[in-house]
Length: 400
Image (tube, rainbow, N blue to C red; front, side, top):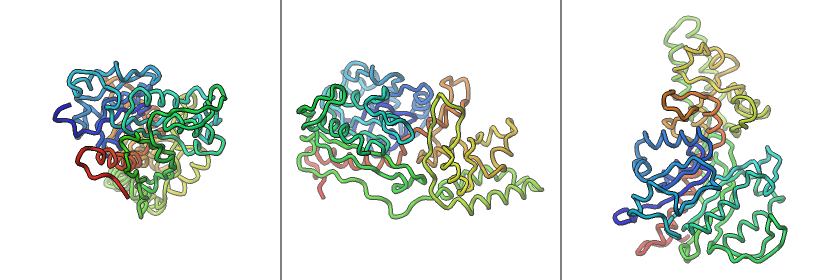
């Protein structure tokens, strides 16, 4: 890899619209592949990588692979990374980080919690990729439900597959000794997103494992929560003012109504948002969650019964009353993404065709609602990067 040997490389499965990818990118990782089955989310990744400043490495060397992760063959399938790897395919033990936000329905409190019996459980495939790639570190993200007691045996199996030990095979039910893949599991922690600058209550379960020969006496330190939280009002002030400003500047009765509506929202949006949900493709359009969540949003001055049109589309669709004035403002896709911790410039594709601007509001919002908050990925990624850099020859080891 020559002059690029200092890069921390990563591959991410179940990448979605880029929440984890953004956070790991901010932590210093360079992506070699982002694997995502949803066509709209994959198009979002391609669009932003092609346009965003700072993503030059990914433009040159990262494959966005649209397809089933069960069919992903990282040792033979990569194309752009071959240029980074001096004309060859990836080799075992060469990748720095394998990460993935594997699907949460098998363990979500909002679902049936079928765990291993859910066809969407991709932990086995993640572990297969670990065995194949032997990356220096592994990061797996899921909902906090996986930490429930009913899944303790399943967690024990995942840990045994990584570092060895006795566990029950989730398919056969046979208890056996596993050799492991040579890793030390540094913990399976539930991190609350609101503790890391995200204006939302969003607990996520994070597993971090580091190859034992890389850890080699170093200490992995979990991120420390921020002293202060960010409120919905603080996060959305600029974008909400921008939405109301044309009506305020127009003056008259509508201008006065807009000014009062904005001030009312400012007075109420002084808390943390409930958890955004992406919803299922099988059900309806986009809204901000179940009844309890809608009630919590109402206390923050937000109408959660739907998602607003982008400001530039509001006039054409004659939706100002619905979007801004009826029972408080609805959030735009961009504002929902800010609540999730995305940078404001990250945009979401509702249709992969570049001949259309950014259609498909429901598809866009689902990508936001299903995402892993970038700030949480960033702080965990930073902690992993510290250990990986500390393992390099001549580096100071990461210790307490």
